[in-house]
Figure 1 (tube, rainbow, N blue to C red):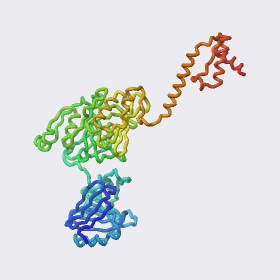
Figure 2 (cartoon, rainbow, N blue to C red):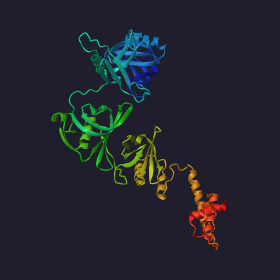
Figure 3 (cartoon, rainbow, N blue to C red):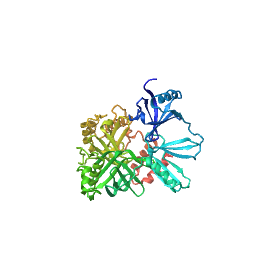
Figure 4 (cartoon, one colour):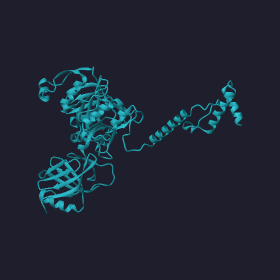
Length: 527
């Protein structure tokens, strides 16, 4: 047998989603590399303490435990792999690969065992299911009940939201509450953010557009706590991707946008952006809950203990220092009205799109951020409802299309010049000349045949020819008015022609008759 064993198409479960990769057993370590994320898990051989071989949904799997309490599970092996893996483990790791059967009785009562970072629910010493405690996002207790909630993975088609355990009301040997003991075992290894210590500062009743409402924002050294009347959110700074400070078009308000990955969740709704709205006139004096020396040492002059100024400046300054991210502001773009944004509509809502130095961002419902590097091409299309507006379409390299509609026609030149300066691929570059030379807009697809337009042109020619023939014939010299059958009257019904002609005849003979009497005489004559 060689020094290593390698297996492809081995899967590991990450918060409810299967990730495949390559697993290698070497003399010094066990290494697994995910094909999707490129993340590498390395387990030094001396740390391996136990190994189990068991039948799982994806063939067979291996469960590895370390002396520090960490547990690793890899699935996707074949039945014939057991023998060579067992021999390799004995020879190199001095660990026996034990076979373990899963319980398939279907019972919902048993024993909960905590082993390192794993919660195992066993029936007759056989595991029914196992929960990695690192996937737990929250743990709540009730009367004889413990509710365990889980982090959600956007890549998983079906996600497990929570599991509830009923704990019998008997007390432990030391008189402790079994419900609280169960919850503490879960929280000790769970990925739960707990507010310990005092907040650095607190902002009261800030207006939040996404998620909607007013929230108290407590700033902690490692996370952000949003406290509202209905919901609470705890956002680690490690999940913050970008910060944006955007002026409103009315020049009286400011948007402060926080981009998040993974997003915060409220039921089935995910919020990838946190959007705060400030008034420029609102002032604030803030004192941080720490000494001046501690502020200087921790934030290196980015913050001071006492700060005052516009509220949006204080909030953005504090967030920039704690998150350690740059704040993105609009670049040199100026619209037709002199503002740095363009009014438009996206889907069913009206909002503002901001051309930035490295992308576009739309606020606020739903927020969209598109970087130039992920844009395949842009397209200027004529408006669907009026010729006083146009649509701006963005197509990404993942074949997703975003259409910002109802943009004022006056914004076209500024936006076209901006896109052209950023060297973005413009799908219909000839569209600009068409807009300048005609009142109507040309189609975004130059090669597409418009049957309706061709029919309208043809009917226009017929009407022009009919008008010309009327003028050339002139007056016939007769006293009785005559109807001329031109292209303008070819769609009028025969009875209508007859009725109009008779009304003319009766009006000439009896000019003082009322219209009603004329119609009656015409009807009698027709009969």
